[in-house]
Each structure stands twice: as structure tokens, then as C-alpha cells.
Length: 471
Image (cartoon, rainbow, N blue to C red; front, side):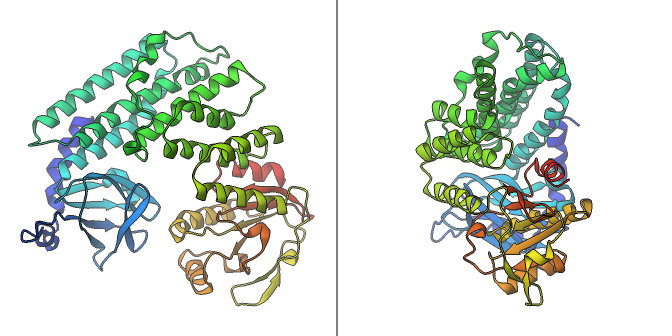
């Protein structure tokens, strides 16, 4: 189904999901006070947790607990026009809201994005944006087969999609009574930037598809769109289309540096250098410096010389004091238990509050010791990953240690997420190599020797690390 058909489909069914019990609430902006109030509510089918969270630029503004019918409602006082996100379980999605909007959603967590439907005041704009999001996801898969084309033919494919989407938006705007500059910007970015991203990826995916080790010759006009892109637009910093494009652009330049200077072999460190040169906004620049340092520290194959280069770039240029402190603490903690060290004696408490020496538990076993995340909002993904890994790698012992939350909360989450009680332990705060604000994994061989002192269960390379290091 094409984008226009999807849009019409959603518009035709949205009225099926209006919640009459909420209607009287969401249309009651106080006419006496003149206060502009917005409402955000809806229904979650097959909920993953009992709450819905509402964010602005990664800052939590409000939350609402689901009632017995899995419905919720959030009243937003003194509300400002803008791009927001809502989160439920381990999923999130963007919403655009204006003062006095009364926006309702209905979604099924089994098919989160695809099932999401908006109704109420402000619904048309949000249904349009979510359909663009879904269409962009489909195009990412569709376009992979086009990367073997030369740059001229590939550009024709891009221009064809761009023309179709622009026409669709022109038709949509003609049906709106009014339109804000921000919404217009969001739509244009959602239409154009995913296509620009494909152009940035083209040289490298073309080489892959054609099995060539030679960088393709590309007409300079292929990248003329770059002049229209504002890398430093803070209003778009957390919008998927902008962030994904900027990331692709920076990685493109980082790849080029590898080709020009093979001695600077690490892509992530190159990314940090490019971000410093191309991005002026401190917040956006910090975001890519943070990405580069974390990816570098998590990769055990990166030479120590390149890791030192990454550290210098990060600590010399990152202006986010919280991030600087977290990274410094992580590096310090990892140095306290470096690769080749014997696991020190660690006294802990099991689920029944009995004192246990973890060294006895892991004796003669290939073991992964992992710490719990400090944020409860991250536990959903964390526990799913644990259950998956324990089932797939039954020959390895996975041991969870927690000093991040209270004993009662710890036990509650173990029960709720159906974790193996015999593999979960509490430790007192103050253990230097565990005292970090980061869910870290440490790989230890059968002799109790650390083989990897800093990785993460969700690291894309984790399973490879597991099989390589603890074979």
C-alpha cells in the first residue's frame, strides 16, 4: 500500500477509536481563564507496562497510569507548540502538538508503529507524520536493491520518490485550514532527509553491491542538497529524520578519511573528529562525541593508540559535564578491573538474603557478570536481553549484580520479568569496579580471569565477543 493509500486508510478508520468517555475532558480548555491546555490520551492494547510517559527533548514532562481498560489521559498545562515523544514499555514514537490540541492514540504493542492511529484535534497532522515514518522504513529496505546502479540512475530513483511525496504533501496542505512553520519543517525533513541519507550511504553500499574495492566516481552535483541541510538545527536534534541524516553524513566523511589515511583506521574516532569540524551547535556536537567515545570504549579490537585519541577528543571538546563525568567514571572503573586481572573477592547477597562469595559461584565456568541499569525505564529491554542470552548460551553462566535499586524493587523486578533468581545477586555500594552509572558486562573465563572488562549486553558485537573470548 502506498503512502497516499495508507493515509486515506487511517483517516477512514480513526473515528472507530474515539473514546467517548474522554471526549468531554479533552474539549474543555478553560474559556474563563483563557489558559491554553492540551490533552494527550488513548488506549494501549496488550500493554507492556502500566504507564505511558510524555517527553520533550528527552526530558520527562509527565506520565499517566493505565486504568483497568488500559486507557490513559495526560493534561498538559501552559502547553507550547512543538515536537514531543511518548514512551510505553521499550517503544517510543513522535507526536506533534499545538496548544489546545486534544490528541488521542490507539495502538497495539504487538505491532507498535504500524498499529498506531491518532484521533481528536491534531490527529490529521500526526497521522500524516506517522505514515511518512512507516513509508521511510519501507523505502530503506526497498532501496537496497538500487545501490548497484550508477550515481545518475540512483539519483533518478531518489528524485522520483521525492516528487511523489512532495505532491502528496501539497495535496494534504490544501485540506488544512492553517499550518505552522514548525509542522511544515518537520514534514519537509521527514520527506527529504531519509532520501538524503541514502545518498550519503550510496558510495559505500555501491561498492558492497558491486563487490568493488574502488570508490565510485560521483558527479559533484549528486551532493548539492547538502547546502540546504542545517546540521545545527537544535529544534530537530531529537527528530529521527534529522539525526539519522547527520549521522550518515558524518560517517560518510569518516569513511573517506579511512580511504585517505589508513593509519587513522578507527571509524568512530574519525566520526568524532568530523563532528568537531562540521557541527557548531554544542548540544548536537556533544551527542556525536558521546556516541564516538562509547562505541570506541566498547570495542575491544580498537588499538590502545586509537582509544587514547578518542579520549583526548572527548575530554578536550565535550561540554556536557554530566557525560564527561560518566565517561571518566566508567574509564576509572574499568581500569580497576582490567583485562588479565583475576576477579577479586566479591561478597554479595542472593535472593534469600544469604551472603554469597561470587568467586565460588563462577569457579570453572565461563561467566558474564553484568550490572543492572540505574534507570528503571531501561529494565524492560535489559531483562528481555538477559532471558534471550541465557536461553541461547546455556553453556555460559550469566550473573547479574545490582547496587542500583532497593532490595524490594530488585526483588519486584526479578519476579515481574521472570529472571532466574539463582543468577541474581545484590552487592553493597562502594565497589569501585562496579560503581558506575552504566549497565556494564564483564567476560570472565573458567580460570576467573577477566577477558573483556567493558562491554554491554546490547552491544551489537556482544555475541561475537562472547564466542571469541570465552570459547
